[in-house]
Image (cartoon, rainbow, N blue to C red; front, side, top):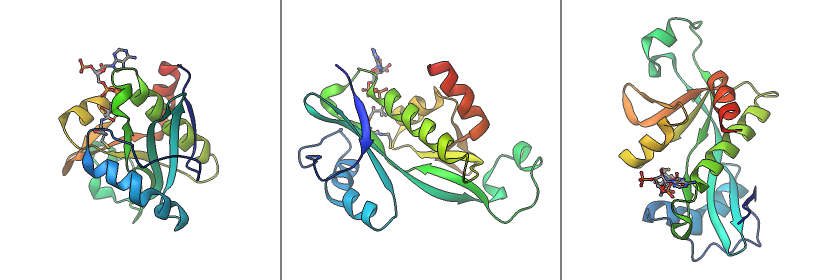
Length: 168
Ligand SMILES: CC(C)(COP(=O)(O)OP(=O)(O)OC[C@H]1O[C@@H](n2cnc3c(N)ncnc32)[C@H](O)[C@@H]1OP(=O)(O)O)[C@@H](O)C(=O)NCCC(=O)NCCS
């Protein structure tokens, strides 16, 4: 079943979407369009022949040196803010569980971010995980938790390029 990923549009029927995490469902059904209009997030939607198979959101973000593990922070200049991208929300529909849609979504988010990073520098890509399963999923792609906030994980842009090459 081919899955395509495209920007959120008015033709996407979001009302019945369910991923198993109510907070993510509510955001996607009720807030995603508003966040798009207000330039707070770009939202990308995976679709197959039965409708919406998943989504993710992407925004710019800033990190401070003190967020990073000391071995990484030591290698950087003492800038006040470091440029980052945030995959704020990501979920596949429950009906496509165990079909690899999560991987398609994160690969697309990384690819899109690295493409944008040719024009606007991105030091790291951040994700928020809802639970241990989510964290385990992101760690498979090389994301590592922030020391002070384990539910938020990061991947250096240079490592993301390698992760994508592995995914093919
Ligand atoms: C986190 C998430 C995106 C991961 O997506 P996913 O890798 O496609 O995985 P699924 O949840 O659909 O399925 C997980 C299981 O399917 C397996 N699986 C994934 N892709 C597979 C494939 N192509 N073939 C066979 N099995 C596969 C996984 O290994 C995992 O197996 P396990 O239960 O034995 O550990 C997804 O679980 C999700 O959307 N959850 C709800 C929302 C959420 O928590 N989002 C993350 C925080 S923002």
